[in-house]
Amino acid sequence: MTLQVKLAAAALAALAGVGTLCPICGEGTLVARAQAAAVPQQLSDTATVRLHISGMTCGSCPITARTALKKLPGVLDAKVTLDDSLGVVRYDPQKVTPAQIATHLTRLTGYGARIIGDSAKSGG
Image (cartoon, rainbow, N blue to C red; front, side, top):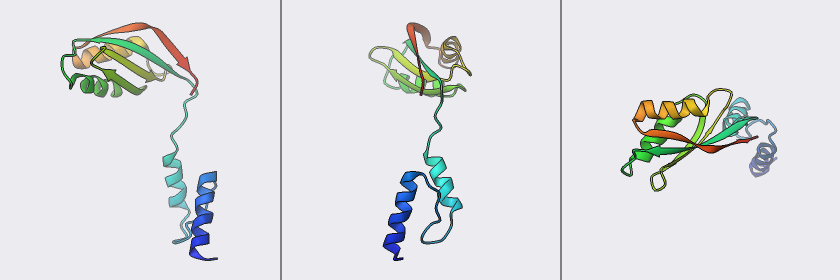
């Protein structure tokens, strides 16, 4: 088999999720580890909470709030905007509650955090 055919076969195998040996060096472990690292783990159950965040006054404030939120175990993602003082946090409800998220944000940053009614569960 030529090198081009081996590379094409390896690419197809990788796309299909099939473990394969590297056609150049023969190593399979590194290829398998790289594939596993590239695929994020899917959570079976996540939830989203919306927060009204008061006290943010400049363009750096949303970055500060987002960084603080992401430090809390169980928070998977956080988006914060200054214009509408809104924080949208995706989290694992088995690890953290909306109230804990709001308290954590206030404790770390001093910003006020009020939960906005409609928390949504999503299988993801």
